Every structure is written in structure tokens, then in C-alpha cells.
Amino acid sequence: MKDRKVVELIQHFSKKDLKNLKRFLESPYFNTNPSISELYEFIHNYSPGFNHPDLSIEKAFGKVFPGRKFDERVITRLISKLYKLVEQFIIQTKFEESEIQQKFYLLDYFSEKQLLKFFDSAHSSLKKAQEEYAYRDDNYYYNQYIVEYHSASHLSKLDDRTSEINIKNTVEAFDTFYWIRKIMLLCLQLNRNNIVANSNYDLSEVNFVIEKLNNHNILKVPSLNVWYRALLLLNDPGDIEHYQNLKMSLSLHDHLFSSEEIQNLYTFIINSVVIIFPYGETRYQEYFSLFNEQIVKGHVYSNGYIFPQILKNIITVALNLKKYKWAEDFLTENKDKIVPEEVYHWNLAKLYYATEEYDKALEILEGNKYNDIFYVLGTKRLLLKIYYQLNYIDLLYSYVNSFRVFLSRKEIVESEKKRQQNFVNFFQQLLKLMPRDQERKTSLLEKLANTNDVADKEWLIEKIEAIK
Image (cartoon, rainbow, N blue to C red):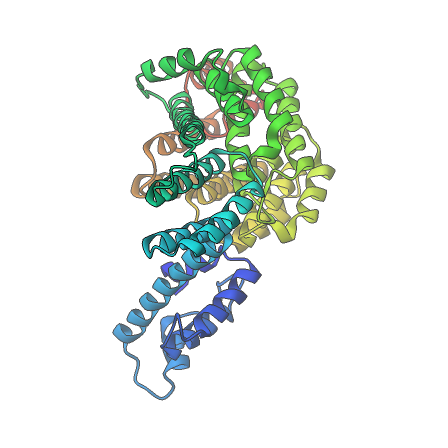
């Protein structure tokens, strides 16, 4: 049952989310079927890991329908209904989080019903909420446009010729929203173009926007200026001036953006590091500096939880710099902020591998299972590296073959599959490399150096070079 979508989904819920979901399901306004609440109670008993062998549809059926003969169709339908309610809970939760969105709906209702007195009150409340909005991002300017549009539309309906309809504010808010959102989309496309091989994206629109906004007054809007600088960097990711300008501008104006948006912008910066800084400690120090600034300012967290991919990158950089104590302290201090729990254990296993505590790393890796394909792939590579360090020859050959079969059968993004297959191919050649075979060693290193898209390429080079 742990493979069911509803279990997989609620694995990502915090303790608070799980508690609120229980209250949601117990509300007759949202759920009139008590069996669904009982099913959720059964599943919730196995949180947070949801890995217990008793978490099965047979046990769930017995709990919800005691004394009845097991019927898979009945319990499957109930699970499906629970999943739909969990989705509804997410929608309701997100709606409740947005005070401005709620006020928009209220304003629409009063306008539709011609309740002018209520409209004025709601509109004033909406303007106040907009002023108090935490960020000055694209959402802010879109909301500002809606506020101004409602005001203009309302005045036009009244046909009050004594009141001025301020179209200028409406247009300015819309233009600012439009350009921020357009540049955001172009940045996402350029970033993908820069990291995905053989991507052919027409850059004419990017060049048009850069020329159109160059020295334009609208760039005085700080959030738009930051995104414009991001576009310049992504259009030329090796330009150190664009790199430094975006770093400085983002550091100065990061309070204008949400954590998710800041992460996107930092990702653009981080992806340029590999082009601008030479391989080695200088590059990793730059990575660490970027991550450390985000940590100090709290940008690595969203709703109190750390982004799993960011955590993985932080720990990887720290380990490359041999900051083992720092990495251990960071994991310990943030354990309650890492979900799902397996993400914490996976990064801890990486730490134990780096400190050559292989038995501890093996215990963690073999005791946890992962749903995310990238953690699955990372675990398989890490296990191979541990077996190599421990000289488990028979296990190595068996596991590398099973990894190859896994890659051939599993549906994985083609570019990522290629990276993993290249790792397996070079790993097998590493196993076959004999001491004092200098000619073959040199040939293998040259072949590896000339092959793009190889997972753990630096590790392979290090191990090949270590064979004398």
C-alpha cells in the first residue's frame, strides 16, 4: 500500500499538515463518509516512514470494515476517494494561505451582485492587504493590476464623471507584471538551453527583450532589474561582469522575493560558476560562499523546511571542501527541517562515505528506500563506490550488472540515463584495469576526459589515477 499515490503524497506532509488533514476529513462540510476518515487514521498510524509491512490494503480493509470479507474493489475505491479529498485539502490550504486571492473572489461577488457599499469596503481592504504583501515580485504587480483594474471598472459602472479613472496606474502595474513574467519565462528557457545538450532555442526573442529594456525607465523597478540581470547572465553565462552584477543586485534586493524565487535566481548564478571558475578548490569555495549566504539569510528554507535538492548540493560542496564537521552540524541542526526523512539519511550516508565510515553508510543506504529516481540512482552509485573501497569484488561485479539492467528497463529522462550508463561503463573498465598497465590507463583517462555527461566523473578519474 505504500506505493499507492495517496501514501506517496502524504509522505511529503509535515506533522502540522497531517494533523490539519485529519481535521479536514472529520469536517462534514468536506467529507460525509466516515470510512474515509477511518482509512486515513489507519494510514496515519504508520507515519512518518510509512514503511511498516502491516501497511497493506488487506489490513486497511480489516480496520475500516471489521468482520467483512476482503474486497479489493471496495478498498481501492475508498483509497481513490481519500486521494481526491487529500487533493481538495491541498487546494483549500493554498487558498487559505492567500488573503489577497480570497479578497479577489469577494470583490468579484460584490461586483457581480451590484452590492456597491460592500464592494467599496472590500476594495479598501484589498488595497490594504496588497500594501502589506511581503514581496514585490511578479505576483505583487499582477495583484496590483487587478486592484487598479477593479477600481477603474467599478468607477466606469457608476458613470460618476466627478471621479477620475486612473488608467495610468493600471497600465503601469500590468506592464511591470508582464515584463517580469516574460523575462522569468525566458530565463527558465535559457537555463534549460544551457544545461541540456543539443537544445536549440531561438534567441531572437531574448535579444529583442534585452534591447527593448536596455536603459528603459521600467528597470528602476528593483525586482524587474534583478530579473533583467539574470537574463543577461543566462544569455552569456561566462561573462564575469553579468555574474557579479546579478550577485550584487540579488543580495541587495533579495527581500523582495519569495524563497522559491530566490532559489531560482541563485540556481542561475550557481550554474554559471562551473563556466567562470576553474575546477578545484576555488570553484567549490565560490559554491560554498553562495550557499552560505543563502543559509545565513534563511533562503534555503520554504515554510520552515529545507529544499531537498539544495540540501544535497550544500552537503556535496561541503564534503568536497572536507568541511566534515560543518556538514555534520548542519545536518544535525536541520534534521527536523528535512522532509522526507530519507533525504536526511541519504545525505548522512554521503557524509559517512566521505569520512570513510563505510559500515555506517552501508547501514543507512540498505535500511532506506527512496521513491525519487535521482536518490535511487545516487544510492546505487554510492553503494558501488563503497563496495569498491571495501574491495568487495564479487559483490561489485554482481551489483554493477544489476545496475546496468536497471538502467535499461527503467523509464528515465534520456540525458540522465546517458550520464548513469556512462558511469557504469567507465566503472566496469576501472574494475578491469590492471596495475602497471600504463598504456591502458592513459587511454582510459583520455577517453573519460573526452566524454561528456558522466555521473561522478571526478571520482572515476581519481580512482583510475590511483592505480599504479
